[in-house]
Amino acid sequence: MKNQVLIYFFYGEDAFRINKEIEKIKSAVLKKEQFDFNFDRLISPSLSEFLNIAGSYPVFSEKRIVQVEDFDDSFLNDENMLEYIKSPSPDTVVIFYYKNSKIKENTKFFKESKNKDYIKLYKIRLLYDSELPPYIKNLSKEKGMALSDEAAYYIMRYTGNNILNIDSELNKLASGIAKTDKDKEIPLNKIKSVITLSKKFNIFDLTDKILDRDLKAAFSIFNIIYGDGEEPIKIISILYSEIRKLHKAKMQEQSGMDFETILSVNSVLPFLKNKFIKNLSNFNIRELKKTVELLEDADLKLKTTSYPPDLIFEEFIFKLSRL
Image 1 (cartoon, rainbow, N blue to C red):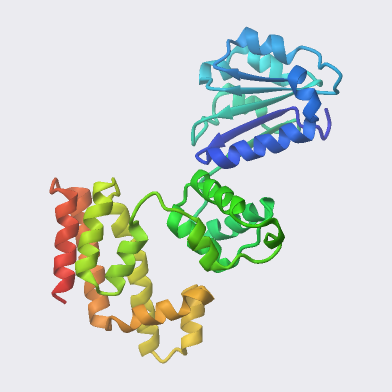
Image 2 (cartoon, rainbow, N blue to C red):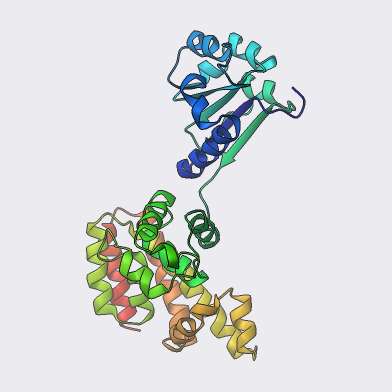
């Protein structure tokens, strides 16, 4: 069993990427024509059912695959399971998909799994916002498309961080692009014309209007996205990050730091440079400091009081308009 992985254990929050990794393993182990007789997907199986199938010989193949889902800790920590992972069938690749973000590392199953080369544990978390554009570009390559950094950023912004939604939009985009054009970098205006949004507005549209100081439009957009289920505390978090960055840049500007360095230390992407400069010009340092304080006050109220969240955010917009 040296250098041969026989048991994979996946867990985490990102179901899309977990399923992609599982598909890669399945494709590497079995040819398409071998699946019918050598692949079993077990949903909430009994231990005896799992052991029976895992111990079966493959048919016209070197290996068989057993994918196990929707099981609990008692299934993993049963003595018979522990015996199996001590000496798994060399003819079977087992893929456990544990649909939780955490595992209990001090339980028998995971203690027994440690330091065994033939058992691999993979935690796949949700990607951070900064990691999404590169991932979108790589995912688009798999679909035969080339995207610019700006195009990937645009898609992330208008689909959110749900990779299933991103994949759906990329599939839509791929179907709308002629085969002869897929090797070329797809222009942003083409992407905008193909991607259809499920919502009229989103949290980033609201942020843009606030940074533009178009507070009447911001108020209207807030009521729309709040009605669609957006959480004010999430809006506050994103807006706070943007305002803090502007405040920091304004202070750096006053200290005499040159502007290219300001853009660099604040990680402003090249295609967002003009927008950042425009937003920076919309506020003076006092207004930015006061806006940070208003956001902190709204955040505290959302977390510690029973006031209606929509009224707290509307109060923030009203106070912002008085600066």
